[in-house]
Length: 187
Ligand code: 5GP
Image (cartoon, rainbow, N blue to C red; front, side):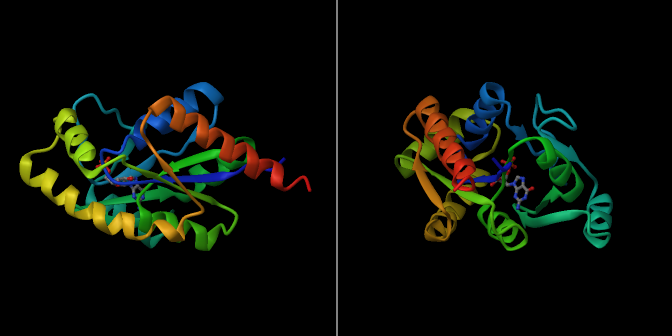
């Protein structure tokens, strides 16, 4: 069985962070840690949620080819460290929780990457979750809501789309997808 590179994307507030965490806690998948220039939110730790870099450090990573992909949104850079992922992939299935543009770029470098989009049960539900998280102001929430339409428009380019009505069931469904993909290669 091969190790699979799994990309999990979906609109902000859809629960993809929690799902990725559930998967890594329960099944021991390795979670990739991205680099970002956004400041840490309360409770976030360098090297755990993200590697928090200055803009200069991030630009240097771009220039030295250290990122598998990167994109800029909400005025900040986000990118996947290339070595981190390749090393982890030697031993484990690796989960990337990144945006749609990033996911599609990863597929260009790793055509066998499995792209999974998490869909909200409804747009109202996403807004409610974003407000409940209470880490962004109204204007920021509006920006994120606008981005949702764009993310959802790319759904058909993804390999799978899963509606997240229940975090645990969604994590299980994704686990089944990954197992199926691992076994595909045995034939
Ligand atoms: P947040 O600021 O809420 O942690 O993340 C904002 C957005 O950045 C989310 O859509 C998240 O999936 C995306 N993101 C996080 N890491 C990466 C990355 O390494 N590459 C790309 N392209 N997007 C990322």
